[in-house]
Amino acid sequence: GAVVSQHPSWVICKSGTSVKIECRSLDFQATTMFWYRQFPKQSLMLMATSNEGSKATYEQGVEKDKFLINHASLTLSTLTVTSAHPEDSSFYICSARARDRDQPQHFGDGTRLSIL
Amino acid sequence: DQQVKQNSPSLSVQEGRISILNCDYTNSMFDYFLWYKKYPAEGPTFLISISSIKDKNEDGRFTVFLNKSAKHLSLHIVPSQPGDSAVYFCAASDTGTYKYIFGTGTRLKVLA
Image (cartoon, rainbow over all chains, first blue to last red; front, side):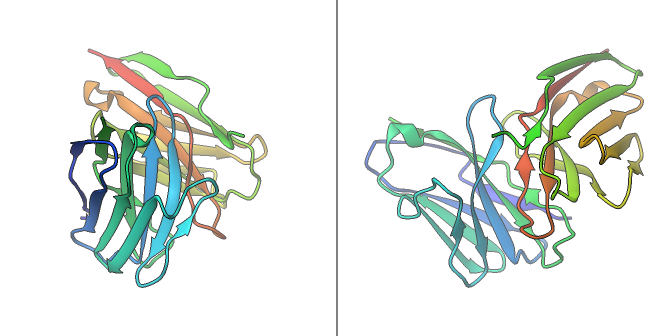
């Protein structure tokens, strides 16, 4: 149980394009989803928290107009990197948590984004 | 300001022996701690957690110990198996925000 699917797993695109990453909870309802970014050999850094049906809460230093998050249903959240630039290249990981806040977050397999 | 620290970037252990991974934190508001295991090109997988009202939690080969006064937790894996080779992240959270703060990870290599 507690499976989170993230798609695509790998994206290469040109600078200036927008990229959408999907995160789905397959066997549970995720009232809250989280988006993280990981640089090589570094920790997972929380970018934003999204609750179903409401606006995402962004961490300090994360541009909300750059990283658009939509949590339209209890099983789907999307992260859109708008007008991507090479410095946006990174490993993006989503996680999902059920309504019970004492349950751990369950992670997708991540998306490797490379902007040329 | 790194609130959660894993000071050992790597650890090698012989198969069958005990693996001990350590984690230190600075924020006294943290009251929930977790360990995740991560293979390359995959997302972290939840292993075990502990609430601050406990000092030990055990699940099979995995035991987490919490020392609140020292702001230190550790993960013990006994016996270690080659399949345990991965990067292990500790994470801390407070029940006010429920956000996870992750350490930088420790790469465990279990030698056959």
